[in-house]
Length: 400
Image 1: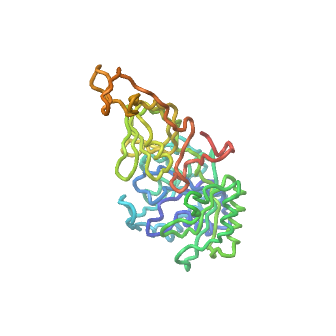
Image 2 (image 1 turned 135 degrees about the horizontal axis):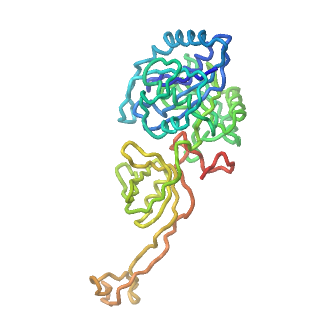
Image 3 (image 1 turned 180 degrees about the vertical axis):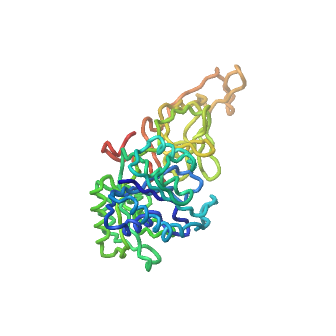
């Protein structure tokens, strides 16, 4: 018995590591039993990531490990190693793309190393940091492959993935009636962006994936998968598989940062930077209510936020709530003209510019109408795969 990990078999030009694992599992010798496959999301800023930075792994059981390793050697050479070197530039981002560099690892009876996995969610991992596998193949893909094996799976969700036939091209065909039913199932999540009215099941770009359905339970994923496969308007598939995942677990986040605001900047692109004495916190325009709330903050306000530290050391906000707000301060109005009084200088009192009426220096305070103690997060289509939805009541779905 052992665990096989695999990563970095795809590029923006096409391919998907989940499908590569599916093909491997279909080819296993008869005396090898495949366990639960897993799809593990990793540090979203990793330099060599293709899209969402995920790796796959699966438990394999056999009484003849040498025979299994012989099969894996042959499968690697004929099916996976040829995927090396694929690359395509992005049409919507200037981020540098790297050629695919597949890696595969085999750990006989591994003991998960949670600290290693946690590091893989928060920073770049180097090849020399990997726990030594029993056997490994390939290049940088060994990093994600090893992290997927060492995920402790303390909290987990599921994703049912189906792949297109190679003969299918053009827009993906999914049964819309089935999608609406699946979206209303209690056990599924992030099936639809209700703000935009768009489905989130089908990927964009060049990918063999037809759809992916996220669910809180394996039974929910299985039911939804079968429903969409059976939909009369869903195109035929080459296969499907239900993955155990760390999506929507908040595994990547620690406790919230408490931040006293020292300044707010609206920066290029409509993004908002919250300044404090300790760091900068970025609310991107795409985060919707999070960014809009950030723009209403003032010096002296106290907020809590959760997010990952980016390579430039700023924190990218994923959850935000206001703890304390300072009042709005304004000069009193002239009792005669009802116009705002203005200062005549330090300790010289106030004057009305219209009627020249004077009065002692004074301020009036009013409370700003902002939501206190309420968590906000980005809309569904702009969240990280690892982030938990807030709109839920079940304990496993909400840790805020």
